[in-house]
Length: 268
Image 1 (cartoon, rainbow, N blue to C red):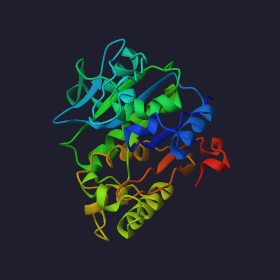
Image 2: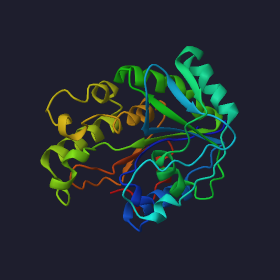
Image 3: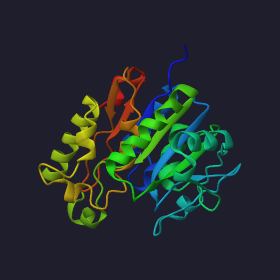
Image 4: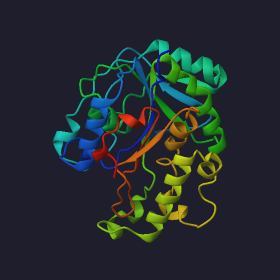
């Protein structure tokens, strides 16, 4: 029996991560070299929010989107010419239900997508379908959708969720270069919930110590995590890597399933 593809949550941080030399990027590249090559990738991105339905990229060659401003020209010249996958689109519709999904020909691969898949699969040789966050769904409903999508892992599809556990740009300037206590506490709490499979704690992330108000803020960077954690299979082991905090931003990332593929030096 073929081993299921893993589910990943990758902290993507600044778009500059993908074009600069840094330990987090090197760890993602090293992980990509160790992972079994999937037939396709479903990428859940923090940078695509929709209302009422979950949207999917569609078409044979979705465009590269540079959804940011004020960065060096080199970043705007990045392209990620991966193919789309009509077969994966259809399978997602079958699993989630026609009334809950919309194929969207206007979107493409935003930096939440190519910012993590470019270091994982630099040849852009794996077909990709990007998926939005339907912000009308509750955290519990996101987890329910993830559980329905978990079947894809048995079908050669890698689920890659892209966001950040701690992400608050409003506090970035004043906290850069520090490790705020609230950020450390929140990150440690979420790490425990992911590694132990405590989905209730992940869904109820704003309960308890009050740190989520600063750590999660508008939640779009946190919610993709629920798609990786919610697609966990009973036999999955879990590895945490890039477990770093810089002010109001963490790069914490997780591998669920095949975690033994991670070399010791990737796990911090």
